[in-house]
Length: 88
Image 1: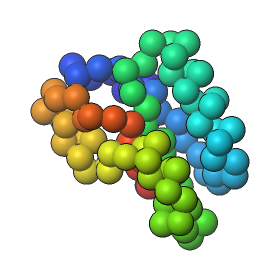
Image 2: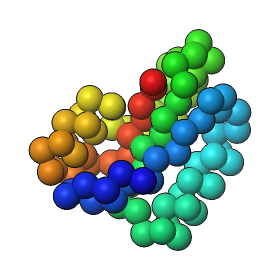
Image 3: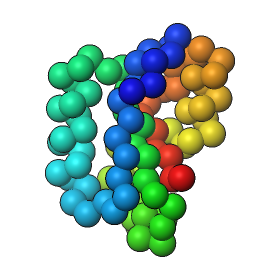
């Protein structure tokens, strides 16, 4: 979890994302159950994940806020405007 002035954000880390739809359902349920204001999907920096981000429009739609925008908003106590995808 990331606790910030702008809200509380569930961080879900994946080393190898397989079934995106199943992950989406799981993460949405966790966020709902704990009352999170948003979700950050943290993916390992791997060719597999970069390809998914490039090719899977549903992933880009579900996690529409890029990492820089999300971090900048949270650092300045603003709502980032959606769920974020961070490749680290």
